[in-house]
Image 1 (tube, rainbow, N blue to C red):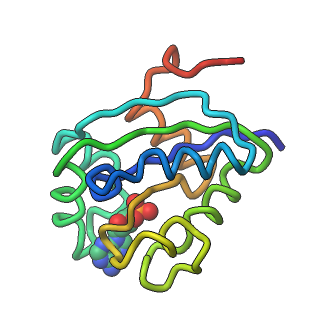
Image 2: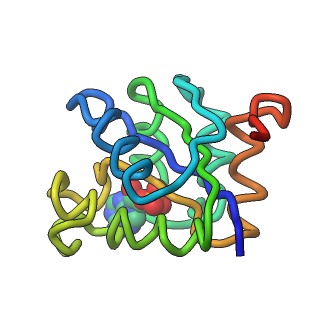
Length: 140
Ligand code: CMP
């Protein structure tokens, strides 16, 4: 099924010059980029984006981290985009992520794990609206 999903290159990924690497891997896999944007999340936006984690012990640090510099929002489109993007980025803890995945190849931290990808259609529908307006997504 053709789906869309949201990815973020997180502040560590941007600082380390990995924007191109992330986009390149998504394009090489065959996904179409339908929206792209660099932003700096403010605290309120970050708290909303990560609201499902608000009771977790790492929530405060996570909000601080995700607002610590520019991030790049990417919406891709393609077959099974949600599950395939999760496979491409690897498991949350970059120390345990498989080599060949983005986190497996570029990360060594559970918090600073280079990228984010929506974990379900429900998450995508909630998350993309926090970063993009509907008229910023290109239908082509
Ligand atoms: P992400 O896929 O963006 O979703 C939630 C984020 O919280 C996750 O990536 C990590 O950056 C962070 N995270 C998840 N678990 C932990 C943890 N145990 N300690 C610190 N940060 C975490």
